Amino acid sequence: MTHSYATGRLNLPFTGICTFAKKPYIEDWDGIEADACILGAPFDAGTQFRAGARFGPRAVREASTLFSFGHAGAYDHEDDATYLGEDVRIVDLGDADIVHTDTERSHANIESGVRAILAAGALPVVIGGDHSVNIPALRAFDRQGDIHVLQIDAHLDFVDERHGVRHGHGNPMRRAAELPFVTGLTQVGIRNVSSTAREGYEDARAMGSDILSVRQARKLGVAALADRVPDGARVYITLDIDAFCPSIAPGTGTPSHGGFLYYEVLELLQAVARRHEVVGIDLVEVAPDYDPTGSTAILAAQVLMNLLGLVFHARG
Image (cartoon, rainbow, N blue to C red; front, side):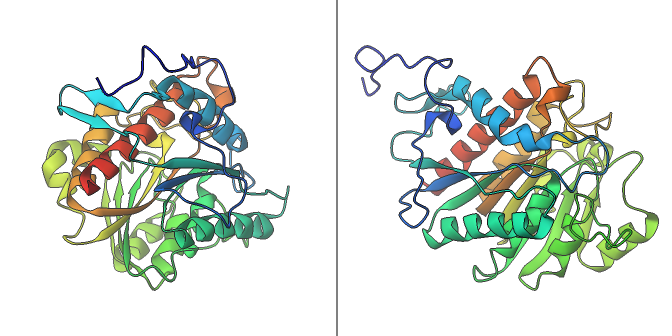
């Protein structure tokens, strides 16, 4: 028997301090020793409609206590595998410092946090916040070699500039495509009335984007969909919670009906984790006040826990 259910502390989900999955909190960003680091980015001043994603990191952390196994990992009978055992060191760094109304300073602080994680050789996992937090997160990879971005989202987020705004939550994939070390983007789940005009789609394809709607993704199937990510690519995954149908994830600022269900996303992530080195993750746009049931935050936490398990199981 390798677990400690009989002898360890019970540590129920509703007790204790709400770090992510009740993992250790590390205040000193110069002394990180971990395989993966959680960084909150509670910034939502880039939002164009309903604000509230600044409370996303706190809600996802609280929800994640439901999955704080604490006793040598979680066994999955379908895969016959135990995920996130004691050999995987995950720590919570708390939140980047957010300066209200100041996008540039707030983004700079998020970038500094991701740089500290990368300097420690760990996997950065950023919890937003609106999708603009992806901009500083990706900037931090400028000395990490070439990467490919897998975006799972309802919206293309490829606006260049609108009324002088270049770093809002409609801009991150355009800013990503401009980075010299980003070799391309696979954008999955894009649908319905979009925040990006036709010329944005044309620009995205011209700059190396492969764009797939939910219906197109379903028609392809998971294996063929995963094949759209180039062979050998090192992958950064950015997951907007509005990629999911608001019937299961209503707690977001810009819900879009017709989205993915849970296993559609999980199976894509599993295929990508098995085939590629995943170098970074962000999950954004959880706005918990729009979901009194808390199920959106639970979904976000469950996806992150499963994705981390899949990434490190593939590495092992």
